[in-house]
Image (tube, rainbow, N blue to C red; front, top):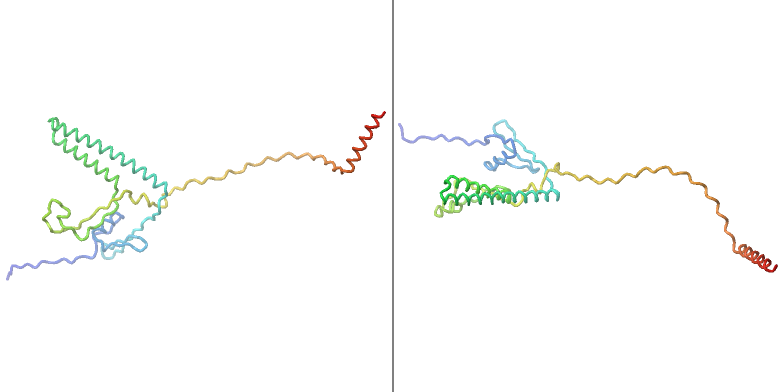
Length: 238
């Protein structure tokens, strides 16, 4: 007897994920979908659960990071300034081009398609400036789940919550890679070596010096002076 009620088969939810990630990027993407299945060890290694019976956990060993030297931070800051300057120049050119296309459209010299293309190029140039000025830093889940009217401002009367998770993109002025680098990437400055002493040439043998005359006593000197004085007097007397 058919009662009109059909029994629906319920499929048991598997404790295994679809497949194990092969890279760190795939691990991060799987972490968003299965936040409680993918963890981190106390040593800072990423752990992926088995994808099927008989498999073992997969561990990703992250490369060590250290504080970047001041020279590296200064060079990255200069590079960022140059990139922002070029991006702003591209945005300025795209906006001027959009103004020219709109003016030509008003005069009937171009079509709507040209305006749409120029407008899209301006949006892409503006997004490029934002990407260079404030780099993406992390993605977090908005909890509790917000209402639709909190995100879509045009629907202020819809109080239902979003059926899917809502994520928020965090941006920062500088990416973390500017301050933390791999120790292998540190280039040590060459140390200044002290100049080696020049080999000294053999010196010529010194000639023996004449022996110094013994110092004359005061009494003997006085007697000699007295004798010379007496001889001089005798010569003048004669």
